[in-house]
Length: 363
Image 1 (cartoon, rainbow, N blue to C red):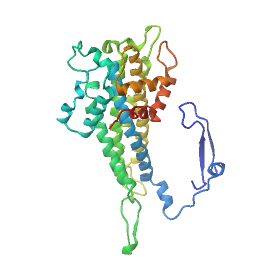
Image 2: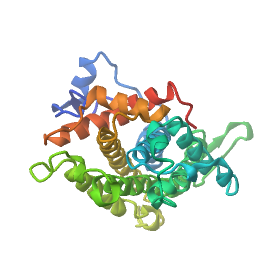
Image 3: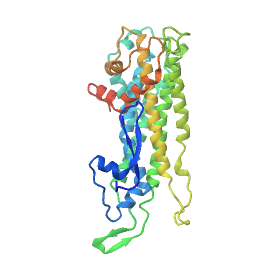
C-alpha cells in the first residue's frame, strides 16, 4: 500500500483453473494499475500490522461466506434427501417448535421449502416401510441449525469488533486525558474464530456422511458409486475419498488456537491470543467445507439421474438444473476433479444459492 516491499500479480484470480503468478515490486505494481502509494498518518501503520486487525479482516470475510455456506448446506442436504428418498416427517414444524432453537427452526423451514411438491417423495410415500432415516438426514435441522446459531453468534462479535477502537494508548481530547489499556488484545476474535472453525467443520462432517450413503449401494438403493457400469467404472467413489480427507483435515485445523500462548517482547506481552492462527485455520476450513458441500451437490445430482423421470421439489429442482448447466451427468469415468472445481465455483461464487433464492425464500 505504501510502495514498499513486493507483491504478487495473479491472473485468472476468479477461476479454479491454474493461476499465473509473478512477483514484482509494490512500487511498479501500483504504477501499473495507476495507483498512488498511501501516505500513512499517525497510528495507521500499527492498524495495518497489528494481529487483531488481521484476524478481524479474516473474520469479516469468513462471516459473509459462512452465512452463505450454511444456506448452501441446507440445499445440499435437501438434495441428498431427494436422491436417498428420505422421509420429510422429521422436518415438521410442530416437532421443532418443541425445541425452538432459532437455527433449527430456520433449517427445518428451508428443508420443507426445498422439498415442497417433490414427485420423488410422493412416489414412495405409500410404500415406504422405513420408520426413520439416518441421523445425517433426519437430524439436518438440529445439526445445521446448531452451526447456523454458532455462525450468527460469531458474526455478532465480529460486528462489535469492526465498530470498536482497538488502539493503545487511547486519547480522550475532551477530557485532556490518555489511557494505556488492552483493547488491542485479540482474545475476543480468537475465541470467536475457534468457535467458527467448529461450526463450519460440522457442516462438512455431516455432508460427508450423506455423500458416503449416496455412493454406498447397500445404503442408498442406488447403483454402487452411482455409476451404471460398475467394475469398469469407479463412478464417484474417489469423490467420497476427497470429501473424507477434507473432513479429516478439518479435525486437525479445528483444534483451538486460543488455548496456546507464547510470551513476546521481553515478557511484557506475556499472554497472546494466537487469534491470527485461528483466522488462517478458519479460512482453510471454510474452503474445505465449500469443497465438501460442492461434492455433495455433485453426488446428489448424479443420484437423481437414477430416479428419473420423477422430478425433485421446488427448490431442489432449481439446484439440479443449475448444476446441469455446468456439469453433465456421469455416464462413464472422466477426470472428476474438473467437475469438483466447477461445482466449487458454483458454491463459492454464490451462483447456485442465488438461483435457488430467486424462487425459494431461504432463512
